[in-house]
Amino acid sequence: MDARTIVSRYYEAWTHHAGDMSGVPLAEDFVFTGPVASFDSAEAYRAMARQAGAAVRGFRVRHQFVSGELVCSVIDWEMTMLPGTLTAAEILEVRAGEIVRGELIYDAQDLRQAMAAPPVVALLEKACDSTADVLGLITDDGWGAPSRCAGWTVRQVGNHLVGALLLLARVARREPIDPAELDAQRTAETDHLGQDPVGSLRRAAAGVAGTLGDSGVLEQQFDIPAPGTTGLQLASISTLEVLVHGWDMASGAGVPYQPADAVVRAVQTYAMSAISEAPRGGPFGPVVSVAADADPFTALLGYLGRRG
Image 1 (cartoon, rainbow, N blue to C red):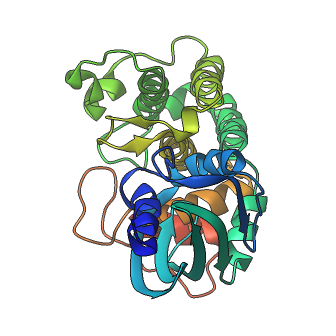
Image 2 (tube, rainbow, N blue to C red):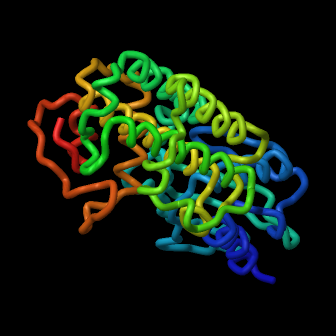
């Protein structure tokens, strides 16, 4: 088996198997160097690849050059936590049918910044804190007021939010779900808030955060809301729900809302990569133009079709 064929299995793992290197012939003492992390064993590299693979949304080999046992590839890939495309050169050395060395070369500044951000589950918990503060300020009249979600009262938005978090936790636990339960109107009309809206939200958020925080769950794949959805994406979806519906309720009830900057940045990064500007329906309307100097949260709301 020549070097190009062996290396093709390595890139198939990134392209089609979410970084699962179990079928790739890496030497036991495989050495990898890169601008973000380096490894000195196949075991350590495989563990990293499984984790990173859950966040990879697209991967392709643009060009490839072979010189004896050295294979140099120009690759493009996209990650959930970053907008745009990363481009790198990677050199892989093959010896006796195994990949023995790898070197990845690219500008990793944006990725380092994304990795330095608070973990996604912690951001979900932080988003919940801000939205729970909003719920604690809403009066009886406020609960019955029209929200910024067309056709729903503030209380209906709260019911939907708590119901959505409960469903996402069940998805992460791989519990059976009736497709009818995914109907947004149904969640809005079901009393998930009860007599303790703040406690109901906190318990629902703690349930999904706790499940997603279990070892390995962020790297797993699920069939809801779409086949191939990763646990990392479920966490991002949960955080977006809590952040934006917090604003929907606060605006409708006329109470202050101050989400954490780190949460806004994380949701903005996710939304820009996961929600296209193509014709929209459902929860996201057409993009609303905002001033060039608008703050990040106003810009995010505009991208999601909401007027700040």
